[in-house]
Amino acid sequence: MFNRHVTFPQNDGGTGEQSNGGILHPPTLRKLPRGRVRSESAREVSAALKALNGAQIDAVRIAAVAPGAFTLSIEAGGFEASVRLDGNGARLTSLAT
Image (tube, rainbow, N blue to C red; front, side):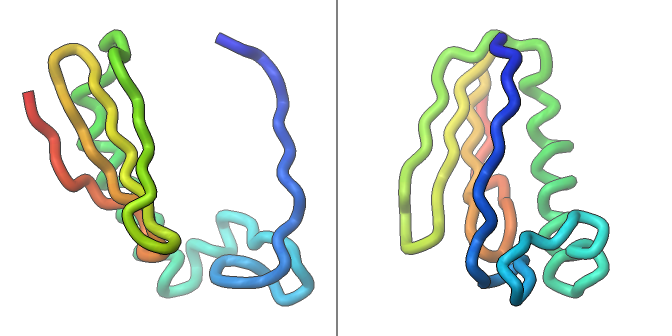
């Protein structure tokens, strides 16, 4: 595992960002209606992906499926999971053995 710190430049506006270009901090974002929905969807996906905990990762892929929308596919320990990531949050689209 790599142990390095990565920083990202500030964004210049948009959903989840402050008008001055700074990204909203998670506690502030979670207080907003869309932020609460996104946080809840992330918790649900994380709970579903616990089936993969401790499994050896066989493959990871990400695909652009629409403007601003991606599908993350993970194969691990005999499981296959697909997660859609877009402006509405994260959604588990499939989990199979």
